[in-house]
Length: 462
Ligand code: ADP
Image (cartoon, rainbow, N blue to C red):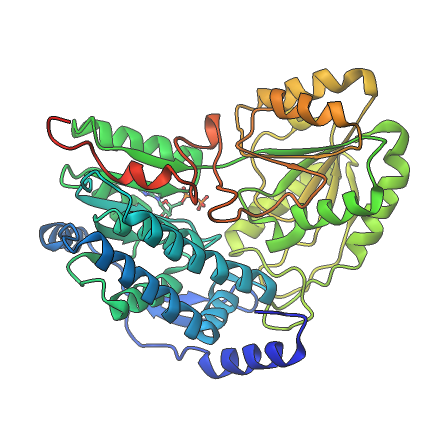
């Protein structure tokens, strides 16, 4: 999709408007975070239904070539259904059009990438995998988890986030339509504490793939440990507390563009998003002025509108949590800049907050809030130590034109993904797999060559 081509854009909007889903009657209402309207309804699985699904779900015994063909067909169906997918991503998840396009592209890439990997696997499937996904990439992460597990020949019970079950249900329909058997893939929507907990506590689940908070990953690990299936892997992608360093040799326009994208795009609701920016003291006044100027250009509003850069956060409770963080900073006089937000809807205005360093952030604030610290050249080592001391290790950004500094930082900073003089967001399936270290996750990265192996086990005796 080339969004700079007006005809392409008009076609996307036309398809999206026509595809706007009609609310159904059964199940819990799912609301649009931009305006509170009801987007649709989703039935919640009960514990008994989870147990019944565990009785019926089977590993996928089709040959690898057939599995690959079906996943590739699903990729085609996803693309052909872009209008409905963009509508759901906007209305259920608050995604702007560029975000929705990027997300669909990533989902399609995951399907094709894991389809290609299926043929090369020489180990059997784990069995039945529980795939537990978050709301911030309700299509791409959901699809990546499910596609990897299926490509390796597993049966899958997919538990989407409470906030975004409709897009997941839509994806499962497309996967079934492509030829994934119903007894191989089932959707179990519902609360994490009910559906997720029932899945992870059941010894018939032979592996869990999870993306979400570090705290939930801990709960899941304990739950899996209790049923004594020590070889059932937990493939986890969790939170981050991501930093960027901009030194006085950096190109300011480029740095500011990447800072704004990294911190505010997707309303800051990316695991990879920039949370704490360190700017070298001598360029800080100039860079901060440019940054606040660039923030002022951001248009905050309904993601359904094409001109919107920043949409709402996922719901009222997310808004309340982020707002409390901002107000605590305001009470201490540390809010440096803030935009206006629409009065109605779950909007949080992009905000810049002064901090001494990343240690001032007690936790990941999952919204459009950027923290700004300054450093002196002599303190660079301490800054790196502070960044590593968070214990997280997901993404790290660096803007510098000092060659030796790049290698030094790559060697020293603990982070799964490092971005030098470029946008601190996004992974590229196949060429730039995504994943973290420490509190941010375990094991080979999603979208990388070793990932599929996690969904298999050694041959008996092998
Ligand atoms: P987030 O902060 O992204 O909402 P969570 O970790 O709360 O992160 O949620 C990620 C996914 O984990 C969601 O699908 C959620 O329902 C699920 N989840 C929450 N609690 C549990 C649990 N106790 N067991 C299994 N899954 C859970």
